Image (cartoon, rainbow, N blue to C red; front, side, top):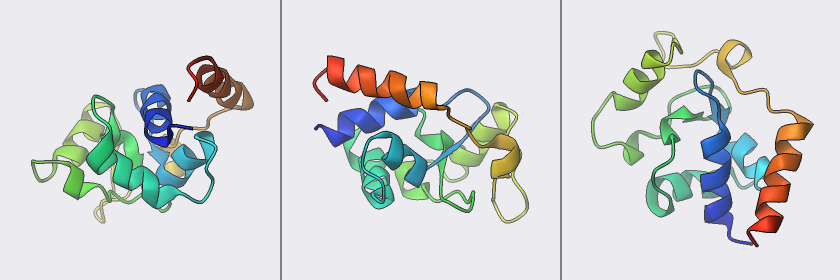
Length: 116
């Protein structure tokens, strides 16, 4: 299993105008409980993915270290219509990606086809 390539693939599936949590990404990668490893991957191992769409389990922006410009994560989310409260939290009920079983099976098929 190439966990980092799986993270890339899952992050590319997060729809425009939605966010996913680090734990949700880990689960869809087949590694539940590895939210921190997802954070590491987004900060150090993967590129060319919409990492700004990934937030912590409470909807907080927690990937500041991965972005060179302060406030860029918030700005990119707001461009997509995702609003944050004064404490830099996204309402996950409103803006969270509600991935389906079909989404998970599609990813699993992709992982198997690409030997990930």
